[in-house]
Image 1: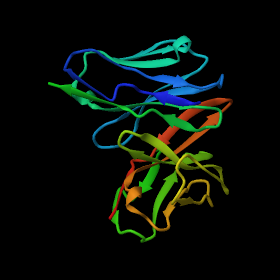
Image 2: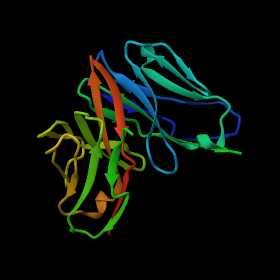
Image 3: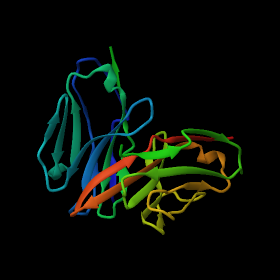
Image 4: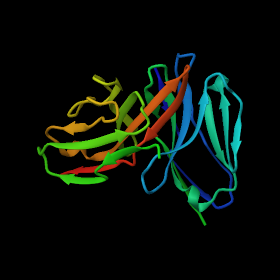
Length: 113
Length: 115
């Protein structure tokens, strides 16, 4: 089976809290790509990060960081010092050799002032 | 500016009235795809196209048609829309190069309501 699981349907935090969004994927392919997208209330899908299966280096971009662990098939996303503007639905997604993009069901993050 | 353009952004129509949602990309991408987004289900693939005149079904193709006569355009056709096709639709394009996948670029979405 090839799928992406985002077990957290909704998370609420208060501004300045750190928050981690979980993503677990399943695939038998040895080459694949993992993505995170942000969908703000306006509805568009905003690309955040791409990671290929051969690169397990963690990445930090400002307040965002990503932890990729092949051993647990996880690609978690952490927002440090969250802000109200971070409120959105976040999707984790997987691309296989077939080019097909498989999405998780999304995690709705609400950051309260 | 590199982009995927979908039109219209919003559409309300009646059951059975044929409609077309247009999608155009200016990045010379080979691969294009349509997704629908429904609450609790994430985004599901409707149809995709690997190149001109090459299309195939995704996970939820029933009730939809597509065509790829030109590389830049990939319209989504609903011949006889029904209320269960009320959804948010996204068109996307992507490309690979030297074995590297560069990910998808998405259009802004089309919110369709069928009454």
